[in-house]
Length: 194
Image (cartoon, rainbow, N blue to C red; front, side):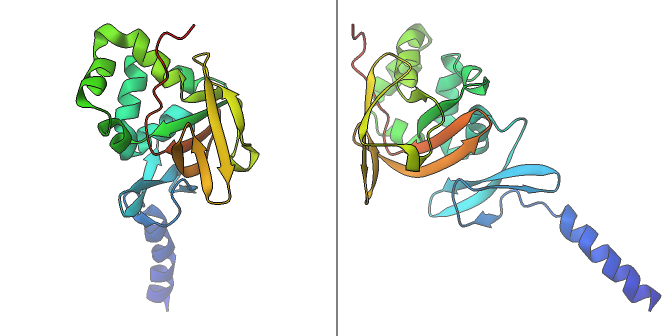
C-alpha cells in the first residue's frame, strides 16, 4: 500500500516536469502556461508545435518563439525596431512569415537586408504596424494609418481579412503590448512617399 501511494504521488510530479516545448498543438497562436513557462502554438508547416516564449509576452518575444518568423525578427533587429515592439505600445503588427520574405525578388530582399539600406528597411517594417491593439473582430473595412505615415487598406469579409491584398493567415496572437496578425506577403510601400 505504501509503495502504490508513493508511486501515485510521484506520477503527477513527473507529468508536471515533462516539457511541452516541441509537442504538437492544434490552435496556432494559442498561448498557455505550463511548467512555470509560457508557450505559444507556433505554425510550422502542416503541423503546429508548442514553443517556449522567453521574457515578457511582448510582440518581439512572441515572434522570437516562432521559427517561421525568424526573417522578420532579423529584419526588426537590423532596423532597431525589435526594442520598439517590446515597448508599451499598444501596437497591431501584421507579420509576414519567412515564406513571405522569400517570395520577394532576391534583389529586393538583399537590398532590404543590406546594412546600407537600414532606413528603407525601417520604413518597410513600420508599414506593417498600426497604433492600438486591434483584434480581428475589431478591424473594419477601412484605411488605417501605418507608423511609416502611409495607409494600409484593410478589407473584412466573411471569407477572411486582407491587408493591402495580403491574407491574414493567423489572427489574434495577443501580447502584453498589442496583437500580432500573420499575413501572407510582405507589404512594400512606395518608398519615399511625400
